[in-house]
Amino acid sequence: MIKQRTIKETVRTTGVGLHCGTRVELTLHPAPVDHGIVFRRVDVNPPVELPASAMGVGDTRMASVLEKDGVRVSTVEHLMSACAGLGIDNLIVDLNAEEIPIMDGSAASFVFLLQQAGRAEQDAPKKFIRVLKSVGVREGEGANEKWARLDPWHGFRLKFFIEFNHPAIDGSGQTAEVDLSLESYIEEIARARTFGFMQDVETLRGMGLARGGSLENAIVMDEFRILNTGGLRYQNEFVRHKILDAMGDLYLIGHPLLASYTAHKSGHGLNNKLLRALLADPTAYDIITFDQVSAAPPAYASQLDMEWAA
Image 1 (cartoon, rainbow, N blue to C red):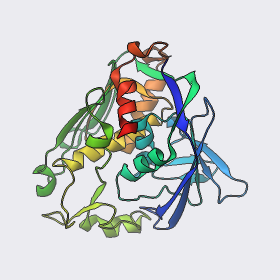
Image 2: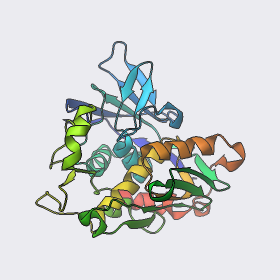
Image 3: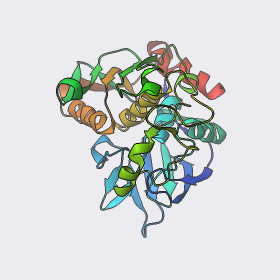
Image 4: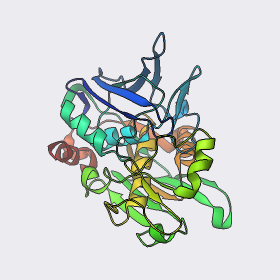
């Protein structure tokens, strides 16, 4: 049986919020079977719980933001991506501010934190959302068109196309595809960092965003080049980060997907619309478990064990 997973012990870290710019203390706790991933704002009296949920996403400007009763938890996608990559089903996430810390701009720090906590298998079957027919969403026209789609697939595969018309990005590769039955999340996706442009910084800060951004937690570019002295971690790091984000956004549906995801210029908002479109059609998916490990796709069987051993 493919079983649900949580962590063995409580772990903590601190960091700065990318958009709010304030110091954040983050604590991860084990959670019981069928609890799901729940964020808890412990700086609010009484504390407010915000479950990881596609329907709980409000603001999607530059991040996926959970909202409930006027309380927010922002920039959840990198931590959610790490949980998806390592197969964590149940987790309590305490934080004392409104934003998950950005760390180095990737999911690598959260992978390390989860590995430090250790994996605990639970005596209950892991639930999967299996996509039964294609579902897609689309916005814009012509050069401004962007879209995202989920298709049936026995496993989890992601393919992403980007277009920024910037020499540094265009020269690094605009397409990436990852089949998690064949490739490692930790090796191929987790270290890809978020990115931004110097010319957008003042605009974003005027909107209350990117106040904590720096060369330490993002790839930053001027009009022509990358400003980070260390360069890129992957040749096509930009589009790999879009896959990292998509994994986190999609995991907000509450269970791992059995699907093939394909997207062109998608972002947090369109990814959330895609999940809502899927959930709105009960004939497009079902929820299944695997009594026999051999019946499950490798992406959710031996591959996840390999990630914990990494």
